Every structure is written in C-alpha cells, then in structure tokens.
Length: 188
Image (cartoon, rainbow, N blue to C red; front, side, top):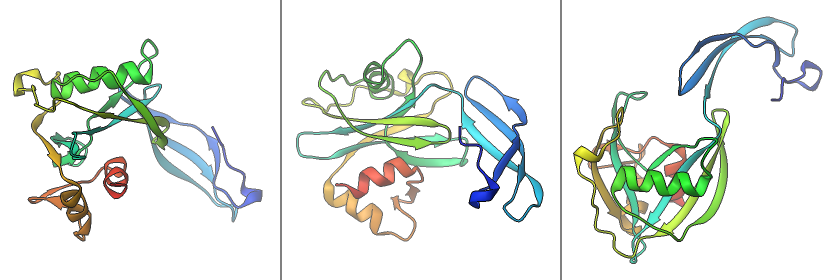
C-alpha cells in the first residue's frame, strides 16, 4: 500500500487505525499528515476480499445483462452488472461462473477477461461472455443469503446509450450507481 509522502505533495498515512471489520469489509479512521504539515484523520473503506468480479454478459444481439438489486449501501434499488467477491480458493474465472449461476441461473463456459479495475482496496476483474441461450432461469428463491435481486434484463445497445443520456443515469426511475457498470455501458 502507498502510504503517501508529504514531501511529494501527498497525504501521508501516519497510522492505520482499524475501527471495524467483518467478513466483507474493513473501516479505518487513519491518522494522516497533510502536505502543509497539519495532522488529521481520514476515514477509509476497504473490501475484505482478495479480488472481485464484474460480469459483462451479452446476448447474441449484443444486449447487456443488468440485474435490478436492492443495495444496502445506497438504500435503494439499482441496476448493475452481476458481480461478486472472489476467494483464495477460486480463480476469477471460477468466481465469474459461480456468480453468473447464483445471480441469474445461467451458465457459460467461454469467458474473456477485458479489464482489471481497482475499487476500494481490491482489484475487480471484468470478464465478458456471450450467452447463447439467454433465457434467465433465476427465480427469487435462487438468491443467496444477504442478496436481493428482483429482475434480470438484457438492455439493447440503444437502451444502454439512453441510460447514460440522463443527467442521473437510470432506467425507469431506477438509478445506475455502480462505476464499473457505468463504464461498461459507456463502452457499448
């Protein structure tokens, strides 16, 4: 981790102060020094996983799969890519296959890693696949504990562009808040 250096004009980490940890995340209230010499504190959030995956799933017509899920952190329904956390026992590809099955009921063997993005302390691997039979098999009973998904939908390229045309990206009043999802929409 880069602790920063005030001589280079960065905020320098004086002491890492962990204030909360669970299976999913760590919250810090770090002691820091600012380039001007002042001392202070900064809150920092970090996922507690070795990596994450975000799934760029397309149908044969090029439509992008988004899930409508209730996000506790934003306290609202949002549209986002299917995604999840990895583990030390699974590769990013195996995690992508597992998340696709858990969140949609679909299966795909052919995947391509398209990007690795850094988000809140972990690398997020974006993997692409095209589903030859995009019939969503998920029912609300398939949701894993702690997850709420109410809808799966393939958005056409035109619909993806329309979502991004709003001052607040959304579809039918439901926002798209996740930056990795917004980046993927912008590349269609």
